[in-house]
Length: 230
Image (cartoon, rainbow, N blue to C red):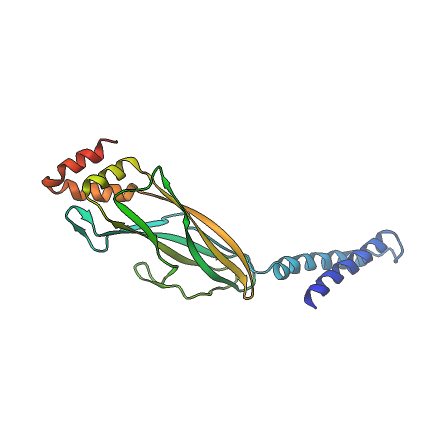
């Protein structure tokens, strides 16, 4: 009924306006004004009601990546290296919006310029930031209030399966990776499928590993091997 009303009302308003312009109604400007106002109101209602909530999930424009080494180093190698990829969920409409599904498309992972030999990459699910240092697994659907945004993230987990020589080669030759994520947004039961892409650099990984190697004389050869590509 709401959609039918939004279709009928602008037609009626347009007929009133045309009739007034053709002098089939008394030449009264007060008739044209309300008709134009009605058309404007219906247009706004169409954008906000028929189109539904305008929810977007995009890479954080500033400070979008946070690198960490949760388990430290062992035998010259990081135990794991985590890259928190921050995303900003935004609801631009005056209606409550919902983020109902999220997944990183591991099949779309693209390495620059080859697949690494010293580590593999996996991805976590969606997480919600509750403070500057604390996150929790996001419970779907994520509810987004009108004209509001929420700070979310997922993690790229680098697991190392080789030695310093291979890692030095990787960090000398590779610059990062690109991966897509897919998500569903909108009204519950009427979701829309969308996708986004992030590009992650290995610069912080390279700097962190080099700093660690530089602090121990036994790793000097790996620093030299790493620097050979700079």
